[in-house]
Image (cartoon, rainbow, N blue to C red; front, top):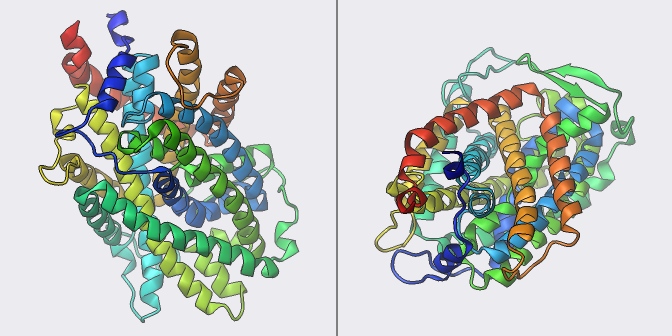
Length: 492
């Protein structure tokens, strides 16, 4: 039994699947430029525009910039490993597929199940942020969605005492973007490219114009003394010091999720051996520079107390409106652009999720339903609509902070396994052609595991329990369905 749990999928079979064309296969329509845009589209979004404020308020204060660098370091190590895997195994499925080829079926299942936290729950997190900024846009026209219809049942308006019921705008945007994904990857990427240009322009505008409004007092001390901060919901976090920075790195790590989503589209890349490394590492480098500068400006414009109260929601627009006198136009422009930007993030998250389960379904670990392609658009439309329902439940009824940290810890765990996997493959199959090779692979793999592990540690025991509970549910499904229906089991 133990041996069957760790049976690996043949690399030769994977490569044959990746080379397949025709009916029932994904179309190769994406070049390196589209893949970089896809990565930036996923990366720049709720992590930067929403989770940054949460990290400042709850964990690190102005030292959030150091947290971004720690998160970037972990992503750089993992990104190098992803790039080698994607150039070697250009198949839809991301870390799931890589783990299946290196560490066996059980680990692959754990990763595939864990990636739901990254993509599906991540999409729900961004949809919640989209809802916040939608209300800001409506306020420009004198309109407002009542608190109870745009917040979860676990949230209460501190000013009025009104409790949330359901986040309807979040459900709406998920439904619209799912419909767009069903239309096709190329069409979705075209829309994404337009939004990406807008988002990058917004980030650069805020950095350039906001730099002159930085108040040095807001950056003093740059690393706050180590204390404990308890949120209005009663959740305690390590604030300041090393643990505050590590915890903040785990929170803002959400802002980097996206470069690995590029790898889920490997089977739709025109030249995956060349395009995948460029798409993954290119998007990561561009975003790291923008992130550190943006976080420095945002934490310098507004105070920590602002982000703990009225400035927590739609934080960028709040900081501009309150402190950047004469730039109300920028606040409005930023709000509208961020709303569009969040849409592209959700789009890529939903794309990544359906592609992971497409691969798992092809392997028999989940029902065939998830790999059924639309007769005209050749997209996994049934899977898309299934995950719309799944993400809508999270977006409608769970607070953004909780789903955001669940996404971060799930992704960090996946990255640790990818770092281990690329080292294992170098030992087991050094003969496989690689379009990209990780330099100093032992060091990079270990450093990636240690850095991502440190961020997992910083997220605290509540998130460890959520991850453990999620993985336990996954184990029940694997032993109840996946193991018996695995195609490898059928050939054994």
